[in-house]
Length: 322
Ligand SMILES: Cc1cc2nc3c(=O)[nH]c(=O)nc-3n(C[C@H](O)[C@H](O)[C@H](O)COP(=O)(O)O)c2cc1C
Image (cartoon, rainbow, N blue to C red; front, top):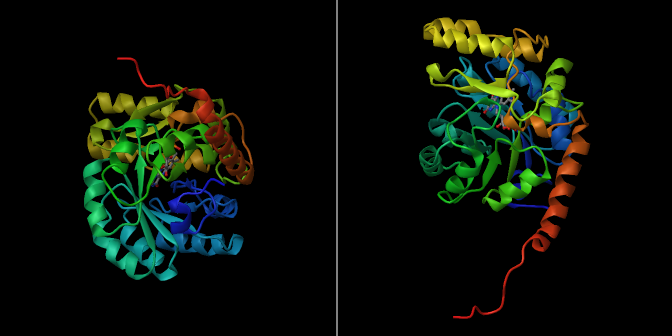
């Protein structure tokens, strides 16, 4: 059975983590992933602390398996959400958009495992010294806010520089991606985009439909002028945002224009004005399936691929003639 060090660390069956996604990763999806043997993660995003507590309670009603909360460190409510997570003693905290270093000791004291999402070796090294338990190394193929390095280049560099388990994220949607991640030195995968196109994900059907119909070139990045590039599906909203960046709108004006657009996509399914954050793996997503089926298929594809791999290569064991 496909099992790695991350399974023991988090008390999960399979090394598959569902990325915390603002407005997308709510209790239903999180519980379904944890029930299926992976680790579901609530996306706190910029939500108020009361909403995060509600989602934790709801998830606990739906599953007795471990799950996590992703804290977006740039959220105006980040401090309060940290207090909620500490009080509720969730199993795992993942963090996005920032450096969680100062908060690590309090999480550890509360018995909470900490797994920051990182996009560079330097930050990973610094956070390892702060005592984190694992990392998500997220490449720029991923949906949402992105770094500058691809998954292929980033994962082995982070895995080669830290002594805690590394999870690969960005561009992974099937068993082939899981095997590739293991080959790069990761102990598992985190997927965002693939988990949106599932029955249990509570987003608007238009979101799922756009991911299923999107091909390899369906996404585009915007927000480079703000220093926080974001990958989303190409649509009138993303094109307009890029135009506004080009004509030189101020940071405040751009932020005002972009605010609320992910919610418009996830809740209202607004194909024109919504920001449908998704990754480059859209072309690998062909259907909307129940989470349990997805997790099972990924694990069985990875297991059979791992068994077949030796047949793909011929290793010459004869001594070379010289
Ligand atoms: C709609 C959406 C929202 C996201 N929101 C967050 C977030 O709030 N915090 C975070 O750390 N990562 C966030 N991410 C990144 C995911 O957790 C995950 O790492 C990423 O989607 C993996 O790449 P993939 O989309 O290629 O699977 C988001 C991704 C998407 C698609």
